[in-house]
Image (cartoon, rainbow, N blue to C red; front, side):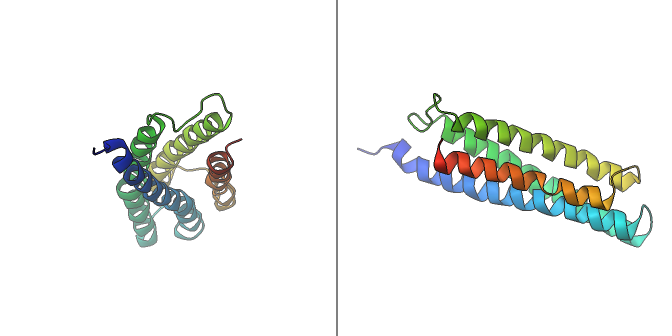
Length: 149
């Protein structure tokens, strides 16, 4: 007899991993674009327009769809019976970290508009430091899932 769950689970998991990789790449790259934008391009001119276009396209066409796919496939995995033991700590630390990553994503999206309008007050150095936020959250997420503490 064909077991749909046994067939679908590895496909959903693979799609989740691909989505996470795409989302993380965008979360790592966008703050770096901001660094160069605010330090080299300023708030007007051709370089400003080029950086703004790159930031907007990254946020709209890569980062947002990747985040949405990550959530859809991640929730599908969470809702798979027998996969998550909610009495352990790891699903809660992972969940909190994914929510924090999503909040960071939303904040970055707002920064795209602020930088484009020349209204951002965040320096290149601050964007460099903020670039570590997804790294720290990724470490918590990976260790939560792999070590399952």
